[in-house]
Length: 427
Image 1 (tube, rainbow, N blue to C red):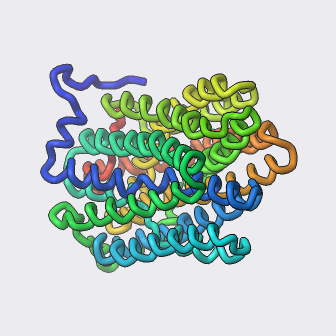
Image 2 (image 1 turned 120 degrees about the horizontal axis):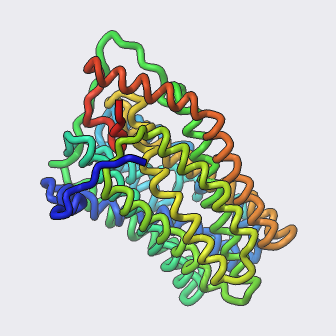
């Protein structure tokens, strides 16, 4: 793919972090996002450890994840209308209370149905701090190339969170106590969320929609249904891998290593994301997205070759290389599809789609593991990867038309260049 190289004397990441307030809100946002990598596997490990059922563990994790995924866009819509602090502060209190109730109910051995309402509270009020951080970057930067670098930085931080989180969760749950991972997740959510929300100077202002212009719902914006389905399939990959990796490691007598193996997957994605964000491409963003998704199906098929934890870790690293660049470009494509007054909600749909898919993947994989072992669970992962690949290839013309429409809007001045991160395109 053609590209323009950055100056060898400058570090693009250091440059964007010198933006006033950027280092502080990005760091606080990273801590606030730590629970997203701990709550799913933490719930699986807690419920499986206390109730001895992967199927039940998958169901509870699915309820928690689905609640977050379904309600996060609504939280994003409220944030677009009322501002980050006014919406997220009360939501944070509800989320931490729900996590505390979930842990308490599980420790007391409550029936499964008692755990579900607390899972709904904990997940449904969580919101998407990744979207909130990206909205702050969009407000702080007025250059599309710098915004592309900032988005790449945040995607790499997401992956770093997924490196640290699963290791912490599995270590705490297996070496300390089954519920301890969720306890730490609640503490990180409260501390990180408060540190993020007190930074009022960088909070983006509420943007009113254009008067007299009828705006369709974000989900119904042309191109969005395809992106939602593709990211849901990616979420199935993530959710199924969490459950299957824990089961696979337990079958081999090394359950405590499951977090390390999951971290290797995130490491591959983080490395790819940092390399991708340090360069500026002139090829169309939709083309890079299609190429990245085309590699996903063959990449996850390698899971079927894993016979040991070391082989599984190597396969996960290779598969992870296709993840971050694709998510970075996908965030840019999604942002281009909507007006700025719908920005937070649109960005939240990326995380929401992945969250819904992760919940479904955890539930399906948990059932397959209980029925036929870890190897059968990997089939859920592989199937989701190929679904995402084939759907993207089938929708490539739609994405190309959206890209052409975006270039036309930019040419006529109806869209600001600052709203197109990672989408530098040649004429």
